[in-house]
Length: 66
Image 1 (cartoon, rainbow, N blue to C red):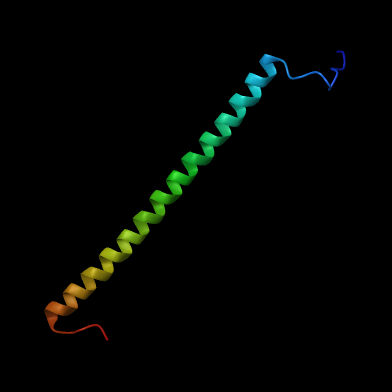
Image 2: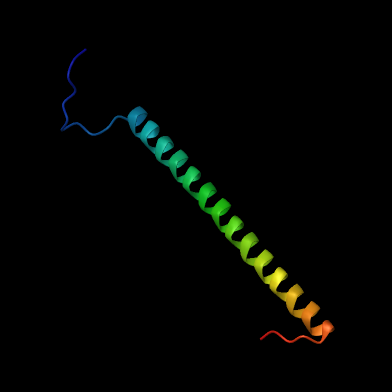
């Protein structure tokens, strides 16, 4: 095993490996952020829906929110 001269530019094979690893890491990050945003939206919408349901129900019963 010979030591590689670090002043040499990366060979095409190594560069492709580095780029594909970086690409897969970025894919993982974007998938996670998409999942997180979806989860956040789901909780916000369900909160809004439950709040609206209470407001409508109280309104129909004649009890305004205090």
